[in-house]
Image (cartoon, rainbow, N blue to C red; front, top):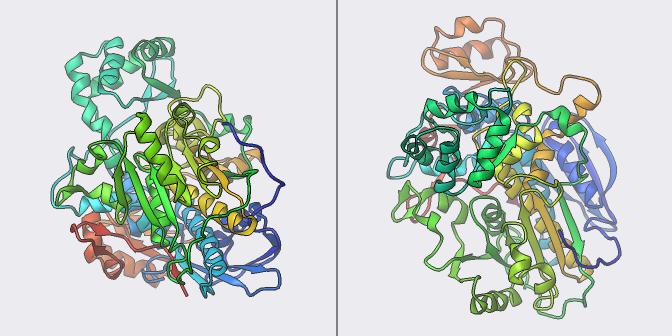
Length: 593
């Protein structure tokens, strides 16, 4: 990863003080990110109630974030990580691979909400610098949950059915010598050739492709049993030869212990100010308190989830987002299920963006892109490593065009792991021990088929862009920001790795965050609410089980097991809307006042 020469070390929150109060589960990760960005930690007060994260510029007034477990749901329903995952549908989506809802054994939503909190504070400071009267940012873990399942929710409530059926199953595979591995390719021909080398008939491998390809969208992948049988009949060397011959990418699952022996970055992103002349172009006009990025222009050339989500978040904050698509448009626009003539999933990531078709492989197309960059504040992409340099569209190529540009690269590996496989969500999960961290003791390590890292990586990308914009505002220079799926994985596994480094079991205890069955559904109890009569709940309705648990002083909620029921679920119905295409839209995760 090549960087230009940097200017003096300065961070966007230098000279700003930080104070936190309330539950550390709601404030600790946000505080860590803010101190990494330069804020001076002035103290923490641990208490109940909402989390409070306050930034105070030198000689200025505080900007405060109020973080709650439940911002749109009732606090009786969502009171911690376990109940947030259960209520918002995260446990349902993560559990699709196994057939029953399962909570993630990591604090995924609290981590995502912490990133949203930092985003809100950074956006508020940018808005203040442009005249907006922002005093408070409100966000909640339940809002993070709705955002995390936004694509799945949009698809579940679309006008047509999924392209492939939901059914349990999916990778990884296990070899005869006990190596558990993930395989990845974006090419159906490579997929068939890989399995052909292992003795699977072409027709069987080809029949599995659509389910494998759509696992990103459905969070499950029912594959023919013959694939698992053939993998188990081969040794790891034979599987590696099959991958080399076919062009498929392989990754043997790594453990958290493996990760302890490898270097890890301190921060999930990197900011590199450019040594360039100060801004001489017109700055955006005054900001609006509710839309602190109003007036900024974001140019996005992204694919799949990570970079499009980064740009979508910036759009929710008020930026004008222009999406660069190939000639003929993004093929994912037609990905089923659709609302009208547009993919419901595509809308969940690209609603509100303008689009322009450019062939960046042609010289004329690259010139057109540079013309757009000249008028943009941010350029974000997630192209394959080396693509930007090869096309002459890297940071050093574009900075003369726009000296104040925030150039954002949201990658898979950030160039930090030599010999790394294809940088997709599931491969990064496999390589970094996420598959072990998300499942409690007693269960085999298996990466989640929910796109955990794509979503968290997209959120971290937006956080990095906002930090870059604030640094530009304070210093008058353009900035390059780098974020990655690897950084998302490190953020997610950091508590488990900390436990492992201390000699403790890095995994959550057996049965952790496993919902309890009722006669007509499932209930989830808060992490600190021990249940001594779980067997009795199986004979009760969900409503009766919740009443019984609450009579015992326990916090619990019903588990969402059908996303298409959320629009009429009393916990969230008031917060969910439909766009002009009829696609379901989740609310923006912050309120500014």
